Amino acid sequence: MKKRRMAVYYTGSGFNESGFFFLLRDRILNNNFNNKGHIDQVKMVKICCLGAGYVGGPTMAVIALKCPSIEVVVVDISQPRIAAWNSDTLPIYEPGLDEVVKECRGRNLFFSTDLEKHVSEADIIFVSVNTPTKTRGLGAGKAADLTYWESAARMIADVSKSDKIVVEKSTVPVKTAEAIEKILMHNSKGINFQILSNPEFLAEGTAIKDLFNPDRVLIGGRETPAGQKAIQALSDVYAHWVPQDRIIATNLWSAELSKLAANAFLAQRISSVNAMSALCEATGADVAEVAHAVGKDTRIGPKFLNASVGFGGSCFQKDILNLVYICECNGLPEVANYWKQVIKINDYQKNRFVNRVVSSMFNTVSGKKIAILGFAFKKDTGDTRETPAIDVCKGLLGDKAKISIYDPQVTEDQIQRDLSLNKFEWDHPVHLQPMSPTTVKQASVVWDAYSATKDAHGICILTEWDEFRNLDFQKIFDNMQKPAFVFDGRNIVDAEKLREIGFIVYSIGKPLDSWLKDMPAVA
Ligand SMILES: NC(=O)C1=CN([C@@H]2O[C@H](COP(=O)(O)OP(=O)(O)OC[C@H]3O[C@@H](n4cnc5c(N)ncnc54)[C@H](O)[C@@H]3O)[C@@H](O)[C@H]2O)C=CC1
Ligand SMILES: O=C(O)[C@H]1O[C@H](OP(=O)(O)OP(=O)(O)OC[C@H]2O[C@@H](n3ccc(=O)[nH]c3=O)[C@H](O)[C@@H]2O)[C@H](O)[C@@H](O)[C@@H]1O
Image 1 (cartoon, rainbow, N blue to C red):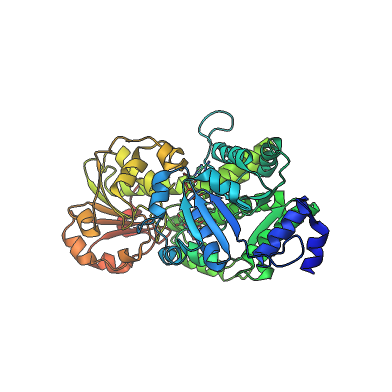
Image 2 (image 1 turned 30 degrees about the vertical axis):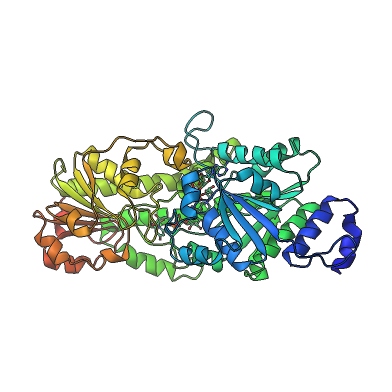
């Protein structure tokens, strides 16, 4: 069967476009034929990924682990990031990642800054670069900034000497593939490029687990024979470990839009439960009980219904803003406003939390020490992009609090940077961000929860790190100013036990402490 295909598509000194994808497919499946139809020495398929970040790094490490016959090179314009990937201290913290990288690095997984060499040698190029929210010009504050994507596409066009499959791994606006195609084809010198959309659904903190066992792998491509063959070639990579029924093929635009839709639906669930949490506090209902009862309906399901201080992370807000912009550009203002509301409720939830802290503490936190436990946007990651902790800290600093921050994975430098950067600046490659942002003097960063809480008037729990559940709260209470407050933005502490110790406790969406009931309404 494979011999016959090769005989049909292999055309002497070169390939037509279908021939390239068949050869690629055969190589992925590890059968290589020369032009006489004999098996050649195996020439490895080469994958190159542009962007060694939270997505590029773990995704490529798992492909390398699961496909030993494929050479995977991850390249980046940031030299320090590549140096870190080649060191014992990887640039991102992700459970299980060290083990995967250690097993493959130097075998069939490589990290390099030599973009042009590896792009020109690759058969499949993943592009996993930043797609931040635009801060200036048309669509500022909403549209995706495709600067990094465009420069990656131009470089691919410039250095390529052979046919390539170019895979959109970054989250991009619908129809980006069309723009990328234009850039690639314009300079193609007769080279055949096939663009695929293969959005990534991993969540940070569980990236390796998600990549090992994805709910689905989505591959969108052109509905032409060459497009379909490119889809097949990429599915063959994933088929090394992902069951066939979880690999979904669609057209390009469905794949691009599905990624934005999935993030919008997930964020919408959180805003829905957070909106309910405000009503629970007003009525005496308990949001955990409501979420449990609602989630028991199999049509709704139990996941992603934890009320919180607000969602964070690099993508939910960015991708919804992008979706809103696309709706507006397509003349759909009602649809745009519908999704905008998800962000508005998230902002409301963060403001509500800050107002609750300030109003509970006699309407001022000026000069008071507030301990911040957790700064990352969720547990098991050191990532702080768009973390609700930034807004909460800025809100408290705005009311002149002194804040003392502890997070097990986030460095002081990162926290200071986050508190001084302007909105959306954080989402550009690190080496292009402002070099030395001004230090926020009212904020200090310490290395354990007990130092953070010593002499504090209140504690805000902003990340659900497991270690915060098991703190010695009696010891903490003894070392705090009185009355001592705990504001639990993640509902992880046992409020009743803390009240027995003497704390005044606020938990999101739970019946209010009698102290808080008399406080002015918050919004
Ligand atoms: N972080 C996450 O959990 C997820 C992110 N995504 C999407 O994946 C994309 C990447 O996200 P992250 O990995 O989190 O970003 P990141 O900021 O961690 O990594 C992006 C990397 O691309 C590099 N880069 C920028 N321009 C480049 C170029 N022209 N050539 C080579 N490298 C270049 C940067 O230096 C940076 O290291 C974004 O579109 C994001 O929306 C999708 C799913 C999950
Ligand atoms: O495109 C992306 O970047 C990714 O965005 C999210 O992943 P991530 O942001 O890493 O983490 P999530 O677990 O989704 O949490 C996002 C935020 O929502 C919060 N959250 C989550 C769940 C919940 O019930 N309540 C809640 O407040 C988390 O604390 C966190 O701040 C999606 O879950 C991934 O599928 C997607 O690939």
